Length: 328
Image 1 (tube, rainbow, N blue to C red):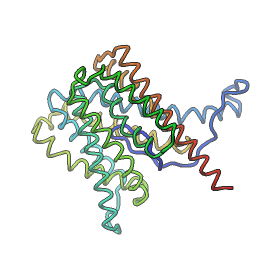
Image 2 (image 1 turned 90 degrees about the vertical axis):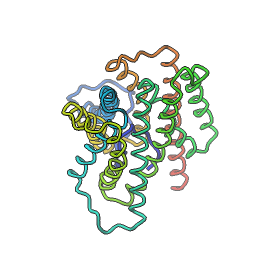
Image 3 (image 1 turned 180 degrees about the horizontal axis):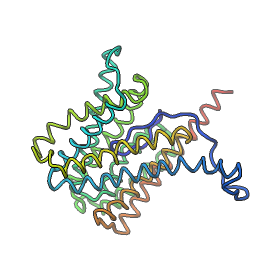
Image 4 (image 1 turned 45 degrees about the horizontal axis):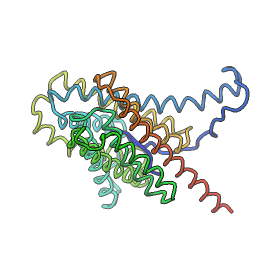
């Protein structure tokens, strides 16, 4: 999740697979019991899975913030990645023999990007609201998508996103915690690297083996920082219980839902739905953490979401045109 697409921290892009034709709302409404109604349900089901995955990720991030007073951001990351790594290694049982050195370098780079993405993101959550952090972070994948497109329309989407960032900063990042904003932008850069190395790892390792190994690398890189910052507080029952919940909500459950959804959902549609993550994050921050956003903040988030959706759709159209030309 192999064109660049969005994936929230801890997400793993699921491999693409054959999908149903895009849904059209033209024509009469069919009953749920009719064949057409059943097809509509089959098409909307994957959409619901992706949205549910986004809700799980962002509410998991909100729960993670509640642990930070006792463990710090580094402690939360260490617990989350360690739990997720153990679960994935147990479920996937990846093979470790028969791979070249280049394969292991790819996994190591994937794990490093994953550790950086999570570490910087949770550091930002300790300083800026959840919706703002995700909005700034999504600029990384957006920049990757715009760069990959290299079309004039990409400038429009980049300008739209820049307008959102200017609004979000209120004309200057001093309105936000500048360190928190910098962490969020750094997490976005790691997110872009995560997408690139996720695709390379998927080509070199079968199924989710590469993901499980990269998650183990990320956990090993994060644990020293978590132990140094939180010490034996990481082993407190409440911390471990909430850490397991965060790992399940932010990694295991969303990955499973996206894997199922992408079996019947076009990759471009998936990416557009993932562009809604900043809005979902803002809702989670408001409901769980009582982080209210101003009208200006909401407009800024909407601009970045619109830019992300536009960039994804432009890239999808470009891909279709290139495939059509090659078929001629």
